[in-house]
Length: 503
Image (tube, rainbow, N blue to C red):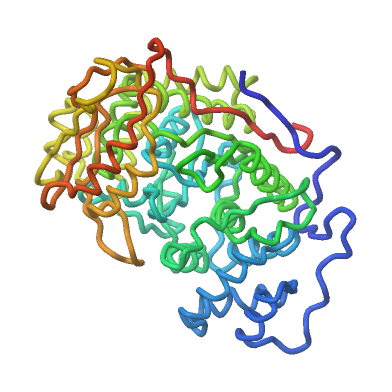
């Protein structure tokens, strides 16, 4: 049974209060700004950056005076030395304030909600959840990101739909929310520009995994091997949105930053605590990422599966996570009396077509030809595939013919090796700005818990290049884990919800 827990007790600090319980506060700013090499050296040697130091670094990132090598060096210094809660709060605010602030009509104040994920394989939840929440009466101004490392990016997936434009001004975002109730956009020179630059740099500087390994409750320093910058990245994009409530999906498992639930919980508690210190109601869901979410991995394939979920069908694990996260948001924002009631409302929006209708409106409002948007949302799965990018070739892998038993039960399909092979095939980036092969991906032909006979197809790879190499085929076959136990129902990926103080 999923657990609910609240970190800490007592009222959250007032917005803008960075003092931290038991802390002496940030040191006084230096009278003269420090140069970037000095700031990098300080953090490299385990020093603590003042508010002026942090804001100076962010300003240099935005105005272009920080060289790419300096940005990478600072990211690595933070990755290795970490930041405490107060530094993280300042960094979060500095990133959020690096661009234009979003302002909404007063009547929308309690309607504004959003969700963020730390990244997973096959994670297309945002594509479904944003329109489902809009169908439930919310406004969802989702500022999202691109692929990082082996994980896919929501913006990249949406850009597999011809014409979809992720760059929208704050004024255009308000029109989108008025028309569709939701929008999914990227950072721009107007919206959180500093975080957009750092986000891209993390992808190519081996700092994607710099999510913190927290050692104690919120307010304590991070461990020496942790980093606070991704927390700031997560929250800065959301702080600028002026939300009523936010849910962060913190992944753990073999294809996540955190290998186990305990480590993910510490990040979750810190995200909730930092959010409270900044006046933002944040809850964090801990969800498993050992196997891909759903059956499809790859940009266009995941759009197809998201549409299937909005048809009221699709893989049960995807639907379960969408309704669970959506139910939590409706409850936190006061749109439902309980989390279960909220989940039921989200499920109804998937089943009655209202979520799909909102998705169609969002597509048309963000640049997709209205006829194409209508065809995608009303067509059959086969018709949809003709409208989206497709890989040139398909290749199926068979269950090992030399298995000791004629059939086995699928215990697990490991997400990480699958994602790494697809990355090699062009579904991921090795450097910032590199084009993606939007039709490349994979379809799981089996479910966890299902019986699989020797020689039966279990994976279909969509590729643009030549046949899979020997190492690639072996890596994929080793991702399939079979056992001799009886078939079973696959468990939900949702494990736990960490709630804000006094929720």
